[in-house]
Image (cartoon, rainbow, N blue to C red; front, side, top):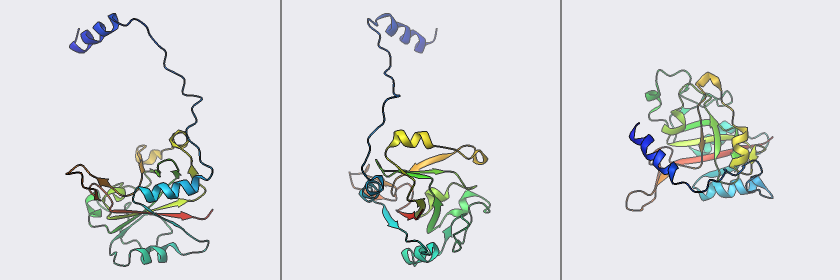
Length: 197
C-alpha cells in the first residue's frame, strides 16, 4: 500500500457520517436585466475598453484610429485587411514577437466577469498572449449572464486540438510590493469591439 493509500484509508476509518454531493442541476447563477450593459461595466472595471461598432463602420479604419503607431498587426481574420502578420502562415510562434496589435474573434462574452471565450482559431495561439494590445471582435448579441451559461456553450475546434481560453481585460498582477502592473504576462490593453448583429 502506498503512503497516499495508507493516509486515505485512515481518514475513511474515522468518517462518522457521509453526505452526498448536492445536485448542481438547479443552479442557474446570477442574471442581469441587461447582460450587455453589465458586460461593458465589468470589462471597464477590469481595465478593458469596449466600443460598440456602428452598422457599416469599417473595422480596419477604426483599429488604425485606435492604434495609430502600430507597425505590426497580427490576425488571420478575413475581414482584417491591415494585418502584417498571419498566425496561420508564420514559421513559429516566436515570429509573433514584437506584435503591436493582435486581432482575434471571441465567440461569446460573460456579463458576470467580462470573460470572453476564445477557442483557438489560428495555428499559433500565441497571438492571444504575446501581442502588446489585443483587439477582440465580439457580436454584441453573444453575451451570456454567467459562467454557468458560458460552460454550456463552450465548443472546441478539433483542428487545433481542442484548445480555448477565457480572456478578461488586459494582463495584470499585483504580486510584487502590491503594485498593480498591467501587461505583466500578456497584453497591456484589451479592446473589445462589439459588432452589430
